[in-house]
Image 1: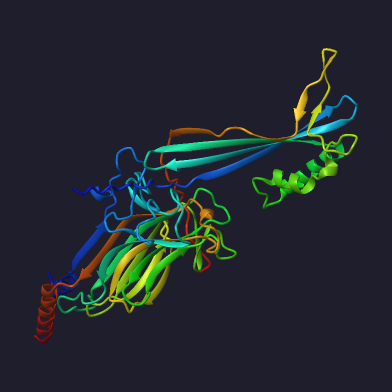
Image 2: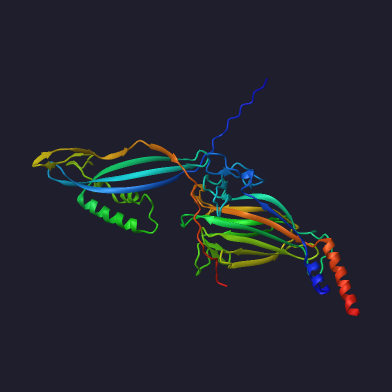
Length: 168
Length: 270
């Protein structure tokens, strides 16, 4: 007896990806008295996949934080450059990261006395008159992907009443 | 009733036949629990890729573009496999040989096709894609069609979508109407109109060499045919209320009309 096995290939439905970015600037005073700007670029990528067969929408979220320590002058210049880039009509969803990559070089980053870029800093925080010395590391931290599913509905078509427009 | 009146009535009587595509019929049923159903292979509809692009054509659930189900075509659920695609269904609508008697007093066979369409695109953005509706003839590549192109609007006019020499809007419902006329049972001359809900319309005219409308189709094209398929927008065109009809002079009607005309001649001679 012959058995024929068929494996049904699951349909791949399209995903809609949206990317949002934010950047924060925080002044950090080091123990030697110098001030640098801790700059954190937060990127959130959301992938939404509606499935008409299961009637579920799957949402996968990736969040990345990239930390840089910049000189105050570099941070000021970066803020201005980002503002200009975001105002452009064709600004992409990742305009912040693109601008950072284009604008920031080694000379803009916090360095030790030997000219090496700092990969971490210990800074001073004074609370209730008492100094504390937290640390912060440069680099990129990616959060684990978070996946959720939710009941999906067919988007009702919203009709408008508008005429055809002819020059005749 | 006067003889002259009788003659006119007899001459104007004809046999009308109509065929519809009913998107609420059992063939288009959406399986329980699903948001929509794949239209490929349903009731004769075929996607141009040969049927591998499932869910590019789909059944739009009620209320569709009115109060019932409709047919949708576009990359809402899946990406297209090609930059230009279509969803077609055979209709085999004869344009010639429709006489069954002798047409008289200008009472010739005619044909009409109507359908409601709407291009659904929530986001009016650059790079949106091109949709269209077509009737396909059996001669050469003859088509009667309207194409809705957001990248080719008529300059100086309002509207979201360029449709040749006029503009239309996203999410506005229009009627696609083609009236076929001719003589001796043939009706290959057409007037194709796009009609808005206020009755405004734009009409283009032509004469086909085709002897039959073989199929009806919805079309899709990427805004930039050389761009990656992943750049496809998520809009789609919706089709509903499809009706094909013919009006053909009946032989008895024509014969009676001739008899009536003879009677009228006799009456005048008296």
